[in-house]
Image (cartoon, rainbow, N blue to C red):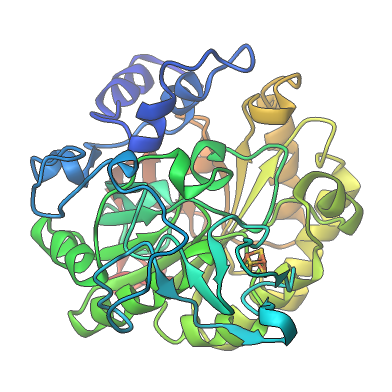
Length: 428
Ligand code: SF4
């Protein structure tokens, strides 16, 4: 599958800069044979990607447009009082959480995700970024992205959303889950004080998206659940300004916040990590049903949905389980939901496993096609046939890709240019 053309595309896709989180970890010894840096270099090469800080001439503490500053200059102080109102706090580390209730003795119950944490005064929830201060729950990451970065929309991955367009992606520290194979552990699985972050209130994020000519703001690469209030306020503004809002998430939401957030979201990519509740409990630290519920809700609301399944050797690559998953997607969500089978690279707690053999990904794709799924992709194998979009009716190549590069577009008004079959997606 690999050739000169592939190598050239990969070289062109080399990221220009790193997220603050990655930079802060750069000096760490690798935990495995493949460090996070090497992993990102090999599987997440980006077309013309540069951090927004780079694009804007910012660096941490530069006093630039977003007022970026290293976390170490603004240590968390448990006695600090919150200031400001929703969407405009002067101290962005202390934004009152939106989804919680108060209990006895100052306890609060966070109602954002199914973990349902009961949090005592001066303690934090399992996601590390929600803290009870005197009986009030605060988000510690509102307006404090650890990563803000321009990317092609294909990187999210969204293959049926304005192909070839640019998005501005934001992510903060924190995650309610604990995946053994977390690919962004140095953002998602750390305390907010452990990583550098930028100051970027929702208005500033949207302005930067506009300034770089992005068509969308993407909440991705960390876990957007952890910064739901920030997502909600940013998405409201982005929608008013005519930008799309893209959410890439584990889907581990409670129902109420999910409904409120989806009101402003145009497309969702869900990481379906395994189609097995036992594996979810063992490797993810959650359970499967809330994720399935989220996918049903997205479809029921008519929001564009894509699914990513990271295929991990010996963990979730059982063909029988892959088949059951594909049947469920077809029957519950629809055969036209795009599914991305992504290649695993050894890292974090599963550094002992090998990268997913391409033959395993081929098998998963074959099973999905046999079960009637119409758009089945193979991710992180540059040059693979499974990067392309084919018309389910006539078999023509509708979109030809090489990595994140769009080489050919044969789609007219959302339909196959050869036969006129409509292809589900947001085509601009
Ligand atoms: S969002 Fe965080 S604090 Fe809230 S229930 Fe989930 S893990 Fe707990």
